Structures are given as C-alpha cells and as structure tokens.
Image 1 (cartoon, helix red, strand yellow):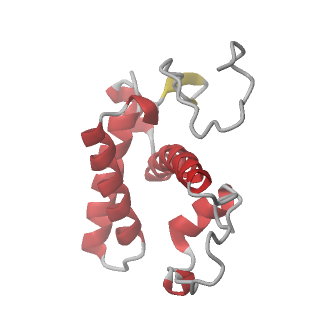
Image 2: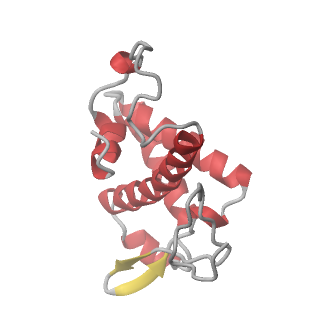
Length: 160
C-alpha cells in the first residue's frame, strides 16, 4: 500500500473515503448542500432508489392522476436530499427547480453505482463498463427502453 492518496496502485478496485464531502447547489445565490450518496443508510438509499424508479415510470405517463403523484414524489425526494433549506426558500422552488434538483441527485447516485459496477467488471476480468466480458454471449440489451431519464443519464456519463 502506498502512503500517497493520489496514487492508484496496481490491483486497486475500489477507492472508498470515509470523509464525506457534500455536493452543493445555489438557490438565489445562496449555497445549499445536498446529502452525499455516501452518507445514506442502506434503507435511505433503497427508499430513494424506489422513488426514483417510480418517478421514471410516472414521467412517461399521460394520466393527470400520475402527474399529481409525480409532483408529490419529486417534492419528497428534494426535501430529503436538500440540507438546511428553509420552508420559505423551498416554497419558492418551482416544479422545474425541484425536478432539476432530483435529477442532479439521481445523477450522483448513478455515478456511485457506475463506479461500483466498474470495479466489479474489473474484478471479473473486464476492461470497462459496456465492454463485453464474454464476446460469444448474445447481447441482451436490445429490449432496453429507449429515451427518457435513463438514456439521458447514460449520455451524461458517456455510456451511449
């Protein structure tokens, strides 16, 4: 093991840091922190993942009742991930603002999951996410949904 934290010794699969650095956003020029995905409990992470998947499903719906549930879920997620935002500031956030905050947080969660997936692929002998570990196997990705939130996230992380 090396004493220098910036070095990546051969064979390092996962780099974990117990010092939490919270990401931040600005609302009306004031900095507010978001919960860091690394500080979430397993249950909180699971709960946010379930809500995120439900938000994705509801985002594709044309039903007005689904729109009401979508607004409620986005508000719940944003309330859970924003730190020290007063009720007054929160009330000024439009639905578009809240959706942007939820999108950013979901992107943070996905980035962490991609890092773990990359480490697992490396551990199994693969070179990178998206590369076929076993080229003779059939490609089962043909029935993945096209477009929507997941496509946007994959594009943000350079995976499409």
